[in-house]
Length: 185
Image 1 (cartoon, rainbow, N blue to C red):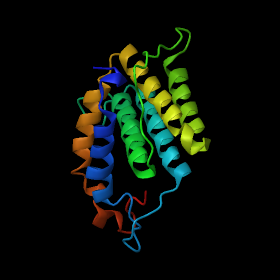
Image 2: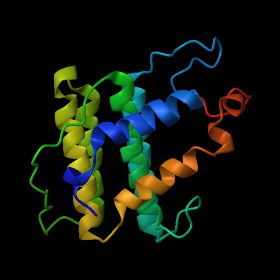
Image 3: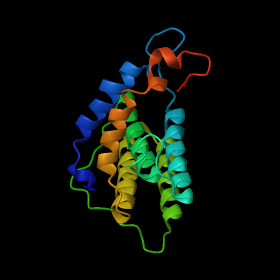
Image 4: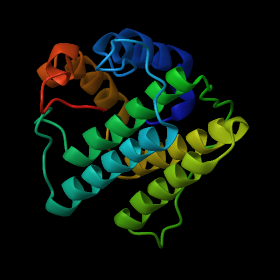
């Protein structure tokens, strides 16, 4: 399945943000254990890093290190969607896809150019007004799904598997994140 219209985005946001990210402490100040007001631009940059990792996986034709039966590009794009869902839950905007026609990239675009368009979409998301967040998040989802459909990547399966994997990661546990070299964000 590679159609963003077939995904229950409200449920996806709930699963990612409320059932995983908040309990893992991604929205908790590591020093005070109080709720954290995350930085919008930082959250957008983390999506860009996922797209960059997808590019690296594509460039080197790598399989993913966490889900070794899947291509790295597929899993990193799944991570980008997971991060976007977490942002939607944490910053309170809705991912809104209603009867969206599937986006098709012009044939002249290379794989890397398509990844760059995804990055450009995140850049637009990072500086947009709150009422436009669902527009640019929708555009990013369309780009990711169109890319995955064109190259036969199972993005929905990768999102589900990576979400389940992330729930058990030691480096995502709050107590490990509080350590000297733990993940800060």
